[in-house]
Amino acid sequence: MEVHGSAHKHASKTYTTPAGRVLTDDDLDAIGDEVERADYDIEGLKTRRRGRPLLGSAPADVVAVRLDPELKSAVDARAEAEQLSTSEIIRRALRRYLDVA
Image 1 (cartoon, rainbow, N blue to C red):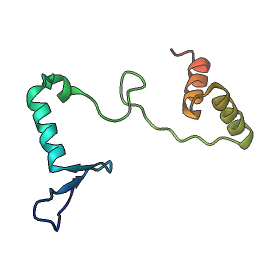
Image 2 (image 1 turned 180 degrees about the vertical axis):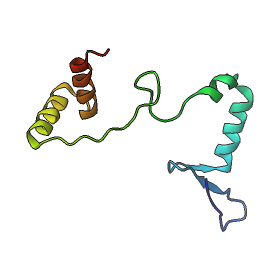
Image 3 (image 1 turned 60 degrees about the vertical axis):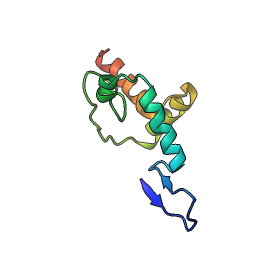
């Protein structure tokens, strides 16, 4: 968190989070008060995963594949038509071809 001082004696400092949100000392006090009053599931918070969700039973591997322009265009067109990512279209095609759920 980035800290910015103030030239005024009575003004509070501001803090910028990594996401760009600016917080004041009053904001931090309010957050602290909320945490003290709330009944958080600490174990649930500790085990919560960050990052992308799993695609299967374990973290997914990234596999680079070369596609000719016609195949790439077909994948892109299907992805747009179905409002899915190109990765999801490719995963679905592989599952069908390999008969894997």
